[in-house]
Length: 339
Ligand SMILES: C[S@@+](CC[C@H](N)C(=O)[O-])C[C@H]1O[C@@H](n2cnc3c(N)ncnc32)[C@H](O)[C@@H]1O
Image (cartoon, rainbow, N blue to C red; front, side, top):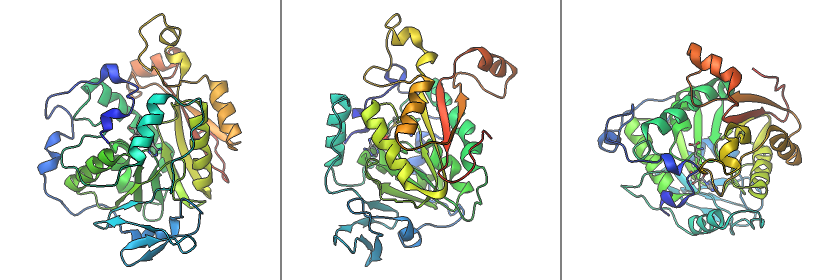
């Protein structure tokens, strides 16, 4: 599936930019693979984290594939660093989910993995405006201490459950033992895998997974889910429930919601809408959804993406402008007081 088919929440800002304007340019496809990163990852090393997406049975590594001993399904591994671990059937989406997402989801689900030498992922910096990419990179910087707090680089595994173009997985890989870069989209995964190789990052494993039935159960240390709780309550509730079930009792997750109050004039139709078919939340609504998904303890860390939080102006404006994102940190079994 072409990544462009996913509804782009910021599509009005999506423009092709010239080469070399950003730190990581399109030239990455031609760069040689360099050896670096904490440890070269293989599925054999993380198989104890994986569960069958149909029956939650621990998977086994068998003759280069992953095997569920209960239902006997085999899940393919491609060239040691990408596995397809999808459930047998797509998730039954509730009626509140937009036809746009529903159709893109079914189409993406039905594909099989194959390398695509030219795909660009959703939000890839080679395909968006510099302003858009800068906002994303500000959020990468903002989230880094929240997800790394208490992390021991040589022990913890980070999972990004809707990793897209890899803004977070590439930036954080050096700080973790392994990173699991999960997504459903073949073209997004193909792009991210190519880019990781070009950057010489060797401790990322790519998993083609459905975030409604991810191949984890109480097994993850750290989990990210950013810019994805946007498809309506039914979708967002199912995803939050899957995230909560994936974490270890000592694990922690960072998720975000788009803040309704950041752009009320657009939401009320008084300015052109740039987030149509998607859902933004007021704080009480976001927290109601977290609790409904069984997440009782969480902390809110507001994030304003339009300004650099390190600048004096950015700090001043953060006091008066409503945050762009409501970022939440939660952990089933540990203290989640605001860092
Ligand atoms: C809006 S993008 C966000 C990407 C990234 N988290 C970021 O902030 O840059 C949402 C991502 O979720 C992926 N996605 C959509 N539905 C999915 C599903 N059911 N399972 C796994 N990934 C899915 C899309 O392919 C896309 O990469």
